[in-house]
Image (tube, rainbow, N blue to C red; front, side, top):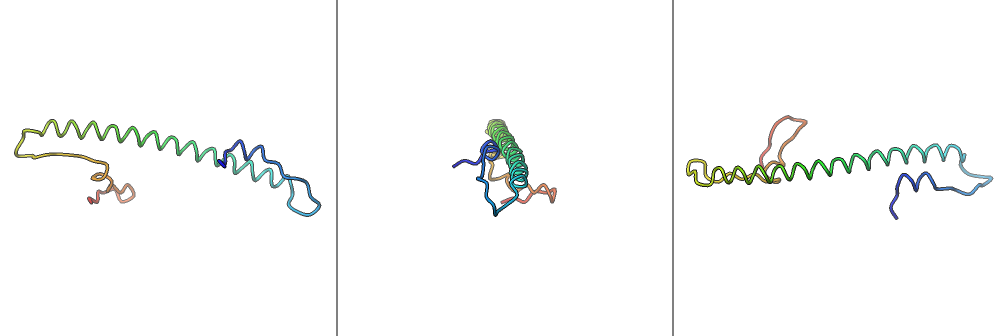
Length: 97
């Protein structure tokens, strides 16, 4: 079962003499639904950006390889997601693998 903000907003629990305050539960589920929607949006945005960056990397790698193909001094130059995955933004430096 996929949990969506809409599912959380539509869920209804039966009344009971003992149990939780229905208004408090509804308020909390509203907050959970809102946060889930925000997280899903951010995830989709990050996935789109990742795809864009992978495409840019593939293009740059192909261009660099083509540019350096016959240059014996430089040899082959190839970028890959694995070779640049060592970037550590918090430390603002590269750590090559």
